[in-house]
Length: 251
Image (cartoon, rainbow, N blue to C red; front, side, top):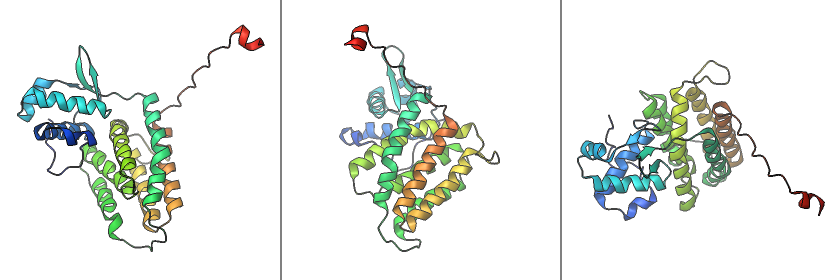
């Protein structure tokens, strides 16, 4: 059953600022359930069912689903209604490609130059997210903690637009990473589930960031994201190039 998020949860998109408060609350509840895996990819989102569950009319549900569709978490079908977005391997690699381009750079900008080693307040929330992931009771809690950890890595980059873009990408990758963890795929050595291997990589990234090593932290983060893609998605075949016409070949 879909649970309601705790007050003050940070799952609202930028578009939610212009929505009525009731619609914002509904949006937050549905988005939380999607990110936690309570509403898995491919699940039909029936307006009447969601309205009854949340104790509202269909109008705020409909508006919330439209906003989530714009954020890439929901797919709207003209005659079938809304479903939680299904992300295939090709789409997943496109999403991760953007993260590889943006997230390491954002982390490097977040690392304070010349920062002395130590457990300073800047990285406290990242440590807390790691601890929540380690002690989580299930995949849903782990997925949310993982999202929060990555957010804390780039939150201090100094560019709110970049943070917003990466938050949207993280929401979309939550649809992918949760499915991968649910499969309990082994790590490279075959001795541990994927999420345990990723947790070890997280600790390495955070240690480098906390020590003030911006380039190393960014490099470790890039390798972390790339290794997840390599483990979980087959290579996307290159699209065949259109054949040139006889005239183009000879003229």
